[in-house]
Length: 359
Ligand code: F6P
Image 1 (cartoon, helix red, strand yellow):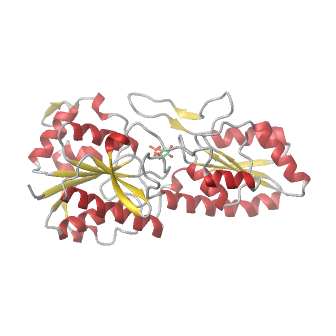
Image 2: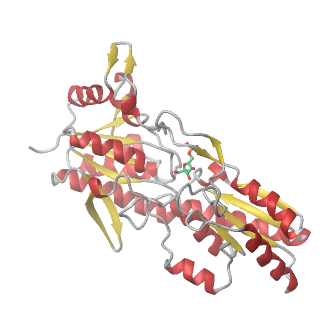
Image 3: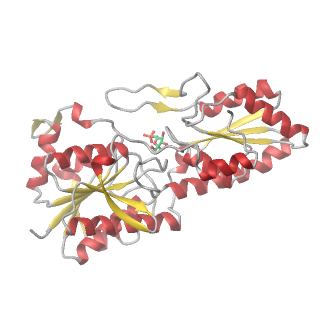
């Protein structure tokens, strides 16, 4: 049966390039005679009738270069755990989504999101909703795709921040610790750290010993360096220690990380006996306009998602396997995390150049 109407939604934390995907989905679908319903705030668009609207090319004009998402998003853990209360009554979450999918006369969905949203999407696919997933995260840790849009923008921003911190660190002969995002994978720290010429890079995959970091800094000072730049992923852990968290996990919602940069700065100041400051880049890495790379990747993802739906290839995630985009089963993606392997080329090169990883 040919597609007549599809829904598109964005879920999880935002990433620069979401709007570029939405635009590509809307334009590609429209040009194939398929109507698009924009679903607001992730799957809430299929819970509350007022949270959806038809999108035509006119509605997506000018959004290619905008960060955020015109559809809104939520980052709320596992929605299957709670019943849904609406003015029309209380519903089981998945029953309600399926009922509204049918009421809206949708034939399929494009679900743009990270590991959480893709896992929810896979559940709905198993319950009979035809859909395609588009991977999104600045952390670049989604399994099965070499890259996600948003990552390049985050790395570019973090690199510029490290560049700026170099001059002030050098002027004051200080250590400056820069905390970047990356809950369970150190891709942002590794790439921005190397691009920015950091002296130390601490990532979740390699538990660190701050005494070793302090020794690297002393060695640099002995060679005449006036400063050191330490890049720390928010999910980096000391050997034998645990994540720095500001809020524990609750009700299916993931723990909120924070404090890794402050911890490293306070300890290094004592160990290296050198004035130290820290900066947390936080959500600045997720905001703002996507880079050209992210715009094109996001546009390709959106176009490919519609192509797969038109071909009736459901239950897949669009994956970047350069130079191609390929469909891979959602089943192979959910529940996994793409971490930095120990033989990663950039990691190996950084070590060869003398970057300290604290191990
Ligand atoms: O997964 C992407 C990410 O930006 C992580 O790097 C970070 O820990 C998390 O989202 C923050 O989420 P929130 O915006 O919900 O606090």
